[in-house]
Image (cartoon, rainbow, N blue to C red):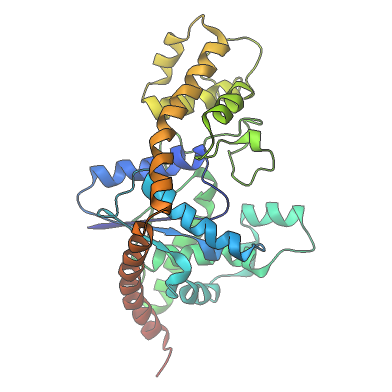
Length: 330
């Protein structure tokens, strides 16, 4: 049985990009695989690399858990838990801090980008973010890690740290493999299609939240940046906005880009955008209904408790093996 793990921070509501680029692929993986140990965690420890409102953070943790299940993840096939409730994540994060080098952490693109925007208030946690991410993965002898394109550098560091540790202390860690979905791995901003759609974007028109109303979705898609020629054609370089909307439609309807191009030949952007909006609305309506049902019941806490207990059992066994290899304790 292979182990697959993934996590996402509980900051704001998931976007359509999170759903199409990650969660929808998770649902497909869980349904197609019969020999997969699938762990998904809510990465609240990662969230506090920048200050958070404590009450909002607690609320976002529950909201994210509810959305994961509402999107189709089956608690009978996956194990969903909150990262901070399994203390071994932080423990192994510290151990891997001690195996990493300042230079390689400072070379991480995301750290350099954030540091360049805020020179005077960059936390040590932001620098160590990749080692905690490595701990999340290596703690469970993970075989496969599904990621977006922007996380590839972090996964390469995880593999390097695992190999370094194994060289020093013996074959403790399994070297994980990277999985990037061929389509939908990067859904772009509706305002600036050269950038990734992000729930932290200050402009709400740039992303679609999974809880957006029908009216909000239509308005955002109609205002999405395209170009002036009115031709629905996939070309990431020349037509990034149109290509982004085509990717969204393809992920939802399973049509190829060629099929989409053929169908909208001569129809212009107004019809195309309305159809994209309608497809998104149809996709999100059952998710929103299930989400609100989960928040109003005890089922969500039961799912998170069971996921925590399962992860805790696996993590505690692994951390004892790591401690023994390092010579920690008596």
